[in-house]
Image (cartoon, rainbow, N blue to C red):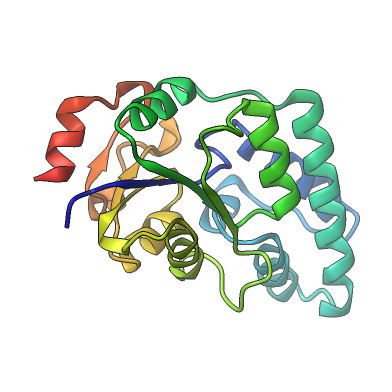
Amino acid sequence: MPLDTVIFDIDGLLIDSEPLWNEAATEVFKQYGITLTEQQYVTTTGLRTKEFVDQWFGYFGISKERAAEAERQIIASVLKKIEERGSVMKGVQHIFNFFHDKGFKIGLATSSPQELIDFVVKMLGIEEVINATASAQELPYGKPHPQVYLDCAAKLGSEPTSCICFEDSFNGMIAAKAARMKCVVIPNHALLKEERWSAADLKLSSLQNFGDLHFGVLSA
């Protein structure tokens, strides 16, 4: 089926927010006596905040009754940090222009809450090119489950097999592939050489590097 739709993750792909999520989680978790190593944190990148908190509260033996408040604290902190210090990733304007010029339908699918989606759309000034958004926050399952990608495709009126997804996390990549979509992964530079990215259709170091040659490979 011809490709006519592109769907983007947000955190760590369009905006450099992963360090801010890490910072917010570290600050909130400190109140509960939890300290994560960098390696531990990376294993839960791409999960919804609820799943992230539940996993580590369970691991460290913290009562799950306190998890909802920790989740609220982390999300509120991240939104404030993004507003104050959020920066746009290299190549964002390029990639939206690339697909807009090709007449593609464009969507956003993320584990983050809708309020973050709305804020980032305004922050990036892409209101005119975004055709649909989907948040996994209230779904029964988040990434690596494919539902948020399937929901976004449905809102766009697209078949999953006509979609290209751009991701930066392992859980997001698995979600995109489980949805039967093409996946371009752009991992954090420190993780770029890991073999686990081989499940993606393409691996790049930046959105800026994507061009007609890569599009041709995906379309073949």
